[in-house]
Image (cartoon, rainbow, N blue to C red; front, side):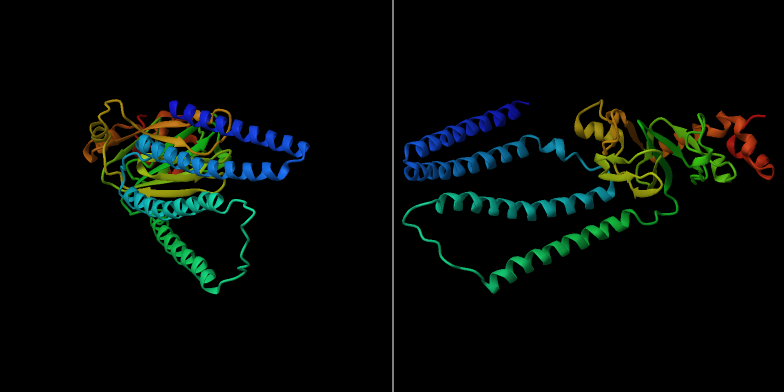
Amino acid sequence: MFGFYIVLAIFLVLAILLLIFRVSRLISVVKGSEEKSITASNNVNAILMVVFMVLFFGLMAWYSYAYFDSYDPPVASDHGIITDKLFWRTMWITGIVFVITHILLFVFAYKYRYRESNRAEFYPHNNKLELLWTGVPAIVLTWLVISGFAAWSDITSNAPEDAEQIEITGQQFTWLIRYGGMDNEVGAYDYRLIDATNQLGVDFTDKNNFDDFENNSIVLPKGRPVLLKIRAKDVLHSVYMPHMRLKMDAVPGMPTQFWFVPNKTTEEMRIEENNPDFNFELACAEICGTSHFAMRKVVTVLEPEEYDKWKAEQKSWLSKNPDYMSQVPENLKELAVVTAGINE
């Protein structure tokens, strides 16, 4: 917050200075001494461009250093390491180009400011320069796009067969979490079956739904692939887990998926961050309405043995809502009772 006030004060000072020189120029026009005023203001503006450049890069360097940990949290998934490499590779390339071009922009504004003795040189075209500044960016961008597309294709491809399946459904303003149960298969759904209790429209003609269960938070196993099946009930949402480097839109009518492998437990991260209250989180990264801020869930990563124990203790949704047995086909009722753990 202190840095924000510094930046605001600097911009206010610059704005006042520019306003003063603008007023002085208008006064000079009225008095008939416009040319002298233009020359003087050009020199001042040219110097201010250099001053602004120094302040701009100084504040940028200070902010990047002071708040680095805020926008670069520790990586907690295998694919996140690859994502970070792609990100920082892109940042270095575009950052170097950004700094060079802006230094030239501000310095040239100073060096080539208006002077009566200066005369512009007519230099309309240069084939070598055209090839250079067209060909080099094209090659670099092609490399970045192809490497990024390869990583994206991997994490959105078919997950390993033993991946833990979790369905995440966005609705205003919460996330609904459904696990694949002991068979590790998230069952089918049908939006026409949605009601006040069956909020996900679970279709009980699919036997894979019998042992599925819901949970108010996300629990993941360390070192195992996890497949997230993502959808939305109303508007566009976005599944975002910053430490996992995971972001995927939840689009109504168009299910998406994303698989990854967590590589740090919550306890390990608490030790690494020296914060006993640390928790991974799931947030919505799409502004989806007035209570968008409320779409947060705690994400807990456990050791595989702890996760298996936790999962075995969960009760199926059907066992908690036995009235929905009426939607199970007659030939599957016996299987449903056993699989869902219903006590008759």
